[in-house]
Image (cartoon, rainbow, N blue to C red; front, side, top):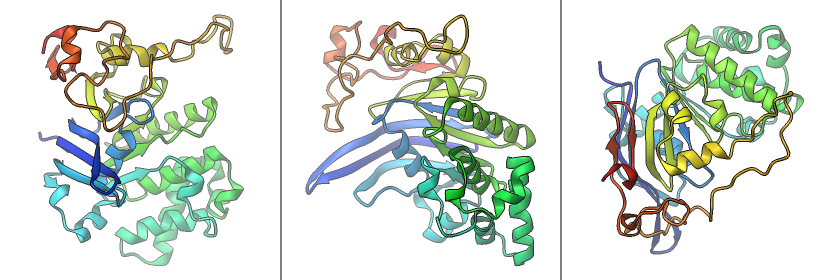
Length: 327
């Protein structure tokens, strides 16, 4: 069976100044199977949000998809007409944005905003649209659904607004949802509640997800596979358990080392200093004539300064781009 989504050699650039283009994504390739959750992990500036925007072809005006294939349900979205993309966005691919308060209209009640997404893709009566909106909100909120539907975004908490965005993303029963840092502005307890909701939605339907985050803890127990993005390139991809517990790329290991440990006695963070990744992440103008992680990794090799490593298959499912393993 073919993957639900297949991405091949996706490259995106931005124009910062006239005549000066910088690379944000370079040669990104991966696939998402039906019912699978793919976690996309990386620090700020690694290209995660650009990837989400490129998949839906909603790149900012100063950006350009230079090349690549984004094949969804057998159709290359890079070649799709604008009218076809409008049908797919929201209808076949749901999306969840980073900041709920900015993504929601401040002067429209929440139930109506969820219903608007459904109405845009399903020509039904106003009553049927309202009923579908409340049905989805009840699935996401349970006992709070009626009050939430009649509320305005500013009357809700951050966690409630995040759930509203999730309701919009799934109201049309799309086979794929792209969630770009959906818990970034939430406290840890609310983050766990949202992750539990994602897990519940997966169990109720054959929902595929791309969950983008900088926090590896959110992917444990939810993601089937994890793609690690660094400087716009895929440096590691493999089963979630392998990437989280046996990471191979130095960048992946450093990311995981930066996760705050919990004390043995309870939920408080210990007093020891957290490790940090040396130096800053590379700028978009960095030369491609060397490994982009060169200068930040401790275990450098001579080849790191000469060229980019190629992706090597450690197993059938686990690939890494690092000279430590050849290439």
